[in-house]
Length: 132
Picture 1: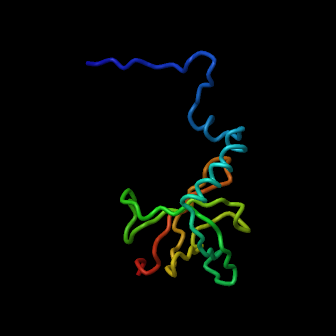
Picture 2: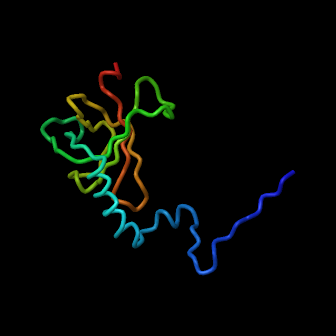
Picture 3: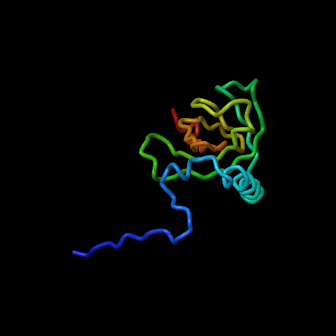
């Protein structure tokens, strides 16, 4: 049986203690994450229409980072895509049943994954044509 050696962080470095370190509001979150977001949007971002609560009267154009459908979803039927969103780009935080329109196709928000203490979230989207 092989023994695994526990590796400690180098002296003088900060130990990351799981969620506490990642979720804590820190200089990284307040200073560097917004800069990283801007670079990612410039490189990979697209502009989509966003409807709050499935209401076309609330349409807002926002920049998001789109990720095509992923195979790791255990929910069925349909193909699920993901979108990274900056919450400040919307009048309120994203919720289930909101709608994202990309290239004329409507996607319903089926799940919102918030990042602890960060002003960004990931949306799990389903093509409304595939829902039926």
